[in-house]
Length: 338
Image 1 (cartoon, rainbow, N blue to C red):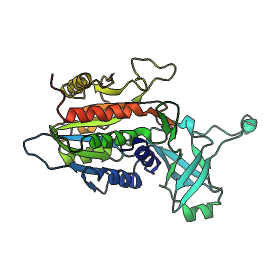
Image 2: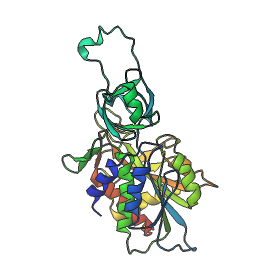
Image 3: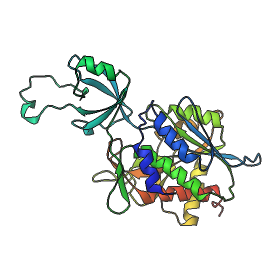
Image 4: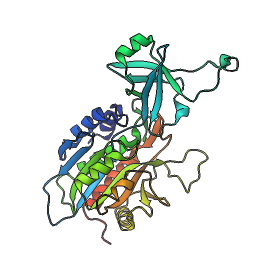
């Protein structure tokens, strides 16, 4: 599998939380190489890999397909679009950005800003709202845009130095890519589990897809692949990971310590770079919904370190994606035995 190519296609897809259909279809197309695939009305993508053996437990590989973005809430009398966030956007990064408004057709727009020369003299009260200028009057705008349409900052995947890449939507399209790469590594290999896949919708707005999707798949164990914080300048090393130092294996009260230990054992036995991510309660990922599905699912998180989370310029190291995929593939083949 060409990781960079697949990741670029995944990241370029529109998939604001609640409107993931285009991203779901692209992910489904890639998943069909390895599994029997269905997509539900919610936008969840499901895959079943190979023949199911009733004597084996079922392991679910999960990553979310949606991305943070914005939603149009109102059209002003001047034709500007008032927008609100979908998910925990870092709004420091939105002012004066070029965006795409996903209306009846895709429209370019600019998030409005007051020039610095006029800010002190504008006489206006500060407003925490954001507005998009699409260059149209209200009447013209209403022909092309409706409240509820999505808004995205569209940054394509770019290669940086070394193995670093930057793009919008790396949270969590890089997790989706890691699952696909793991399945590629498992082709024609014997596995210790039945394998199913969930690429879930609406993680960024309440982990809703994981709740419905994991109920449907009814797995015994689950691996939730997501991103976590990578250190930049001043953050504490005990709350962040390091880019390029390997997959972050989650340890938390809400996770299965048995599974966490098994993945740590696998990484050590197979020489796969890893880091420990300790959380003192909930994980803030789909694992929180998966683990309490039905009568409970043993769940672990595998996180890819990421800088500038929830901005249009997220940064990861491709080697961390490779290590995540390698660890999943080795675990699925039963390499955790001491």
